[in-house]
Length: 621
Image 1 (cartoon, helix red, strand yellow):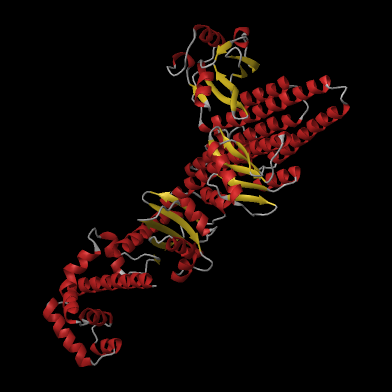
Image 2 (image 1 turned 90 degrees about the horizontal axis):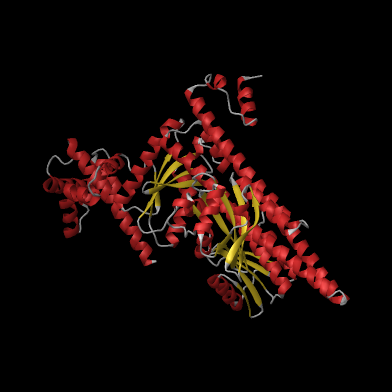
């Protein structure tokens, strides 16, 4: 068995690579191996979390007793979050207290029998916040409302840290799903999100169990009314089918398209799903939207509730006061239809939040790798990971470049750049600009890079904003990419100093002028004024073209004949103009270091002047 195979076998067994093998690796290989192990453990952890949540969701479609279903959910919460104890507490409206319904890991009867007045403990914090609440140390937390009998039960169980997520029914908090630790513990945002997802499932389980109980009692009470009994049984069966189908859709990812299709077919109507900004995500079977529908959707989102009006029904998609959008149907639903819509919305909201969490975690991985690439510290493993996550291959340097993007008047974000470039580039925020790796259709050139960046330039132009973009071909070795990034930033700064917007600058765009702009802290206007200001003033006052003649003379290697052909004038005219230039700038203006200073200033003036002309043309049109 090869050395690499031995390492991989230990990783697959999740037993860790032993020191005897680890010491045989080079320092870079050790670092790469540890990073891979961390990523592998993270993936396995999220896989276990996903399987746990989906397994808990699958229980909702089974014909189980309420206590059994909730007991399984509590065990799932405790297992996924590695908690010492877990329990579900339900509110007693008449007694104004809450009591423990099911537990897992609890060892004292005192805690199982505890009745907590509403507003006390972490449960009170959940109710007041209308959302998740936690404490790292119950006994010493001043934010927790304490009662001696409650504190005694908690201390007897040995619980210190507690995390709770609310159970809701029709928008009202009816209890909480809780986990606890017999030590101090701080809960991460991901752990809070997992418990909230399980609490949403527990809420559905409670509603389903209560519905089944209610229907069973009705069937027993109305046994003599055969027709009514059949209708209630059919309704129960229908809702059970709905739960089973929604659970299957949740296991498959619960895409908005599949939820819209299910609701439309189940209620025999049209269905629309909107995002939190009110934009249409999915319409089934068509996309026609009336003004009445827009009003109902807006009301449901503003009130975060279920709304029935003007022949439409709409329900806000939300997870504990966080708006995710609206689901709407083209019918005034009855009670059975309302349950279907509520279940569909809860399934969709849970899937959206979970998918968003996974996407955010993946985006963070991409950003981390990109920052390593730009810093020149990326390893080959990082390059391979970037290719797997995004499809971008840093090794394809002949068609790839590193781009620096700046703006002064646009709300430009990396996510916007990624969306506009549509797969040709990957961007992230870096210091005071946005950095992107861009892939061109053909080998790198001024034309191919401008073509790749054209969608972003069009986006900025449509918003009447200015973009400054510097681009440098990717280096062949990873260590040199950081220098290429610095060059792209220098080009971007050069564009800003020249006020050249709506174009892409590459290393050969400015010649030596680009080096001056990248290194100097003076403005271009100051450089031009100090060097050729008097010449420009003379041209403006006398309607002459001395500055243009001086630039052509220097560009043509001080050849009078070539300069005359370039300007379409007689050689004597050129000589006369050169004599006038000597009077204004001095006899040594075209020799030695003065020639370089004048040449750079003339080029800067030409570029700035061309920008003004383009802006005037744009305003005219």
